[in-house]
Length: 324
Image (tube, rainbow, N blue to C red; front, side):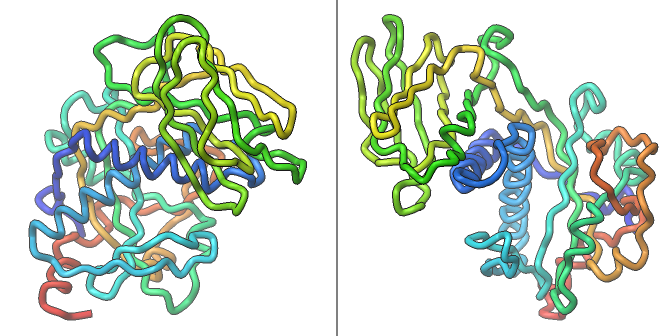
């Protein structure tokens, strides 16, 4: 059973968000050419997940806890890697605590964390392959997630401006490639952006571009599909994109840009539980339940409370002693 003293509190630094954004951009490129339109809410969830993973890896290194990185065994996660501790593949379950619900760091309200829901989607529980040694590690992040438009943005706020391209560009129905693209910025100001997608060999590619007023700039890659435009500086003018091969163009207006930066205050590692035990002990999460720590959606979940998990230090001790 997890008590307040068992919670592990980690600092959240801006480089965690930067690493998460880099991973999220790769995900957008990976999704390019596939069914469905990329979701910015899912993008930010991936940013948080990667941030927690990196913070956890740093914590393990700081405590001299042996770990290894192995290729994922999931067909849906080809190219991904898994963190293994004490012979168990760590599957992070991350929950976000908005500022308005947690004005102070979670460290100041550990009783709420212990009572919080430890949720796993029912689909994930069912998809488990017997014999896989998976362990769920539950983490809570305090902070602020933004999805500001340019007209609503604040000057002193960190930013990661993103445009997910329409399906005609990110998931074209035709087999014809976009080819080399030409971009042009309106107005009199320079704009630095990066673009990403898949090339003619279906490899994920990205490139940094400097758009000068009145000049047409061509991409160095030939694209099969284009997933996103990304900028750190606030865009000030429209950007036109043209595919000469497809004879199509798109003008990215200022209202299409969204600030997807994630501002973290801290991370709390709450506890762990092996998958078979969670599957056996967990309860169905009623759709009518209200839990301020959980992201409510139509997806079905299985639930335990954090207090019903095992203290994380038990797993780390197994790794340090070599027991499995």
